[in-house]
Length: 176
Ligand code: S3P
Image 1: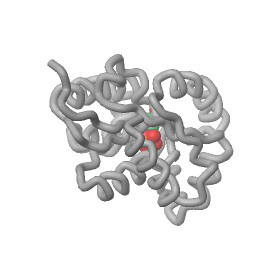
Image 2 (image 1 turned 135 degrees about the horizontal axis):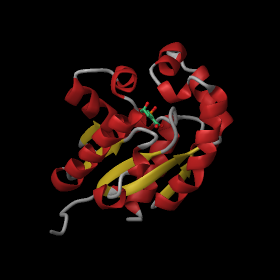
Image 3 (image 1 turned 90 degrees about the vertical axis):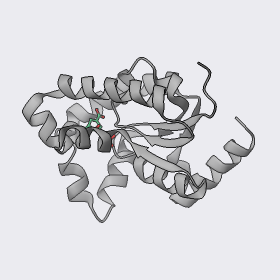
């Protein structure tokens, strides 16, 4: 069945600002923001950190696959933010227009550490605990993000979230 309206789906490494941007963009576009991690936490009645601790990463990835199928089948005209590893799902490009929030690893770390909630943001992400491993993961994923993206936005070029939203509006208006 052909989809009537496209979603926008943000991908990118942990801490790139996908959820916050999705919420801000949805507000501007008067539509709804959906976050895949939040859905999973609701499905399990547990925080992501606990899901990793209790059931492991593979189980979590299975939940992401389930959410991806639901998004493709049932969600339209929404702005979706994803976990950094959501890119393993097979149907990502069928869910909507994929926008990659691109940044260097150092840019990501700087972004998290300069946030007023830095401690909390680091603590809730199991795959960010070991900085060396996180960097390896980043390097492994960089090309995958790039290859899945309909549009890549280099977030380090922008001073604020507002500026990124402006850029997104330009892209949407151009119908890209
Ligand atoms: C993950 C990213 C997290 C969350 C989980 C795994 C990853 O989301 O889904 O901890 O594999 O990159 P954020 O990208 O919002 O941190």
